[in-house]
Every structure is written in structure tokens, then in C-alpha cells.
Length: 207
Image (cartoon, helix red, strand yellow):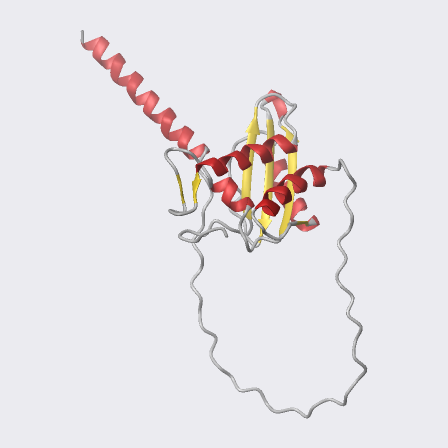
């Protein structure tokens, strides 16, 4: 009888550990906004005004055109379609962020662990078993979290997650870079997207 009771306790304890692990792996990624430190006023020395020069010709910055069907477009287009529906500015693909995302994806190639890089950027992660998961599916899995987001309370309804969605639609975010790797030993597919400036500041609405 004692053995049956001990076995039951072991099973309950194991299930509890698995539930805690599952919640930790699937936790959304939020950050505290750093406090603003006032800069002391230092008067600048007066300098003579420069002589007038011809008015410069304004040339708007150019963004490289991404080829249709490229991995960048597969990530970027669904992000911007979502942002457009909310009246938000589109994101632009950023090579520096893409390189950072590729670096982190390469670190996870050996275990496919949903572990955040905790770097200076916002970050969304995706994992799927097998090897056929495409960028668009990962992005759509984050978009559907919008059903759980309650704008009035700025929180996720029920037990659903919505942090991936809120990062995608964070008003101040301007740039995006993502990467995808097929993990070794059949561990699945790991996908990561990085956002700059980051979002998901605690207590702030995304838009």
C-alpha cells in the first residue's frame, strides 16, 4: 500500500515538473524599460554663425528591393500586412538583425531549444517538429495570438499567449531580421525573428 502511495506521489511530482517546464519554454518575452536618467545641462560656448551655403537637395533614403519569394519577403510581407490593417508603419528588412538572428539560430541548431538570446532586440521564437516548417507558418502562428490580446486591459485573455503578436505590432519597431534552421538529429525546425527598436515593455500598449 505504501509503495502505491509513493508511486502516485512520484507521478504527480513528475507531471508538475513537466507543466512548469512547458510554461517556461512557451513563455512570452517581455522587458522592463530602463529608467531615464536626466542629462545635466552644460551651456555650449557661443560660436559665430557659418556663412550661408546653397540649400541642399533632399533625397529620400532608398530601401533595397527584396526579390519576391526570398526568405526576407516570406518573413516581412505577413508582418507588414498585419501592421497595415492596424494603420502602423511597415517594417524594413535589416541585414544586421538578420545576421544576429542567424547567429542565434545557429546556436540552437544542436538542440532546437526555445531559449531567448536575451540580446538588445525584441525576439519571437518558433519550433516545429519535422523539417518542412516555412517562415510564413511561423509568422501566422504568432499572428493568431491576436485573438487572445485584449487591448482594453492590455493583456492576454485566459491562458492564451499574445506576446509574439504584440511585438509584431509594436508601434515604435522599425526593423526586422529573421532566420530559420533545421536542427540536427531530427530535432525539428527553429525560427527566430528580431525587432528593433524592441517592444513588449511591461505596462505599455503596443499601439
